Structure formats: structure tokens, C-alpha cells
Image (cartoon, rainbow, N blue to C red):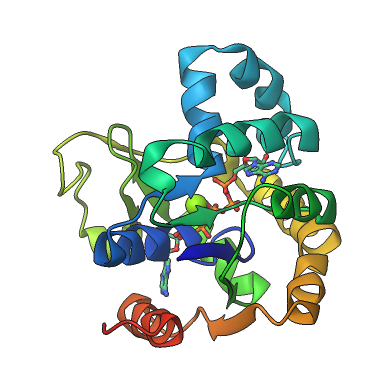
Length: 209
Ligand code: AP5
Ligand code: MG
């Protein structure tokens, strides 16, 4: 099954994609993670992406489309995948339709005020990318999966979060209408707790939670 996770920053795309991918045994293709890795490794793509990511703006379509096209051509994507954070503009969605058949688009809907709180309290593992929130960490500063340090993402500061939200509403939200017209969109309430959200998505995908 080829699935898209659509939703504003902090909606829970990464959290749910990790869980659904484990359950369905398919890869999570997170463009944000790919770009952060490229920045860490100092590749040409990483250097191009840095100023956009730091400012909470989208990386240009031509940079991201080729990256995703190459990734989806790899062997592990043959039995399906979850796209987490792509497409994010109508031109990206149109480009995707030329090299992928999408079965379902899951839209995670969450109010902006909740998102600001989630992002300011998010911590991620430097090593495996596992995601946590300070409200449930009880002061722990290492990853429970691999024991490495937890950090705050550079773009999770208050000012950048606001521009990411504006960018979402202006450039990515139009994809809700785009995929509704294609009969692919399923909206899920993303503010109902991680387990309930997971169960709702599994229900839609027709698999047992
Ligand atoms: P990206 O990394 O994709 O960031 P994003 O879309 O802003 O989304 P986030 O990763 O911040 O949030 P999420 O929805 O994954 O939430 P999470 O599960 O972590 O992109 C970063 C940047 O890269 C972009 O700004 C852009 O510059 C660039 N980029 C990436 N893709 C691009 C593209 N296609 N085109 C152009 N540029 C691109 O959860 C957040 C927090 O909430 C966590 O603390 C979590 O524990 C908590 N939480 C999750 N679910 C729940 C729940 N149900 N209840 C309570 N808490 C919850
Ligand atoms: Mg994410």
C-alpha cells in the first residue's frame, strides 16, 4: 500500500508513520529526516536545504522531487511505503503522480495552538530519530530505544514554528482539496492521543490495530 501522511508541523505524521510502518512492515519515507541527514553529512542537497529549513520555509520543489523519486525507486519500496512530509505543494503532488500510484492519503488534523505546544516540547533522538514530548519523558534525556541523547530540533523554536504553520496553511493545505477530488483523502482527528490516532488510521487502512 502506498500512503501519504498529510498534516501541519507537529500533527503527528512522524509519530504515526513510525508505528504504522512497523505494523505493516513498509518503509517510512520522511523528507524532513532525509534533508536533516543531508545537512548533517554536508551534501550538496543539505547545503541547499539548510537556509530554507532554518527559516521554516519549504525547500524548492525541484530539490525535493528528485530526492523522493530516487528513494521510491529503491527495492524496499516495492511492497509499499508511507510518505511523511511529501508532497507539500500542488506541483509536488503533480510530479509524484507521474512516478507513483497512491492508494490513500491520511490527513492528520490538529488545531494550531496544540501544535505550538507539541513542537516546543518535542525532543528527538540524535541517533535513531525516535520522537518524544517533554510531558511524558519525566526528565529523561536519553532515547529509550537506543540510549543516545535527545535534542530539540533547530526549527522547533517559537519564531520558526510560526512560519512553518503559515507555510502549511498557504502552500500545503490546498492538497486537502486536491486529494479529496481524487477520492483518496481520509481525515483523522490528530488530537485524540497517540494510541487512539493509531487505531483510527489502522481502521482506515483496513488493517487490525
Ligand atoms: P518535517 O521534518 O517534515 O517537519 P514538519 O512537517 O514541520 O512536521 P514535524 O516533523 O515537525 O511534525 P510531525 O507531524 O512529524 O509531528 P511528530 O510526530 O514529530 O520538515 C522539516 C522541514 O524540511 C520543512 O519545514 C521544510 O523546510 C523541509 N521539507 C520537508 N519536506 C519537504 C517537502 N516535501 N517540500 C519542501 N520542503 C520540505 O509530533 C510532534 C510532537 O507531538 C512530538 O513531541 C510527539 O510526541 C507529539 N505528539 C504526536 N502525536 C501526538 C498525539 N496524538 N497526542 C499528543 N502528542 C502527540
Ligand atoms: Mg516529522
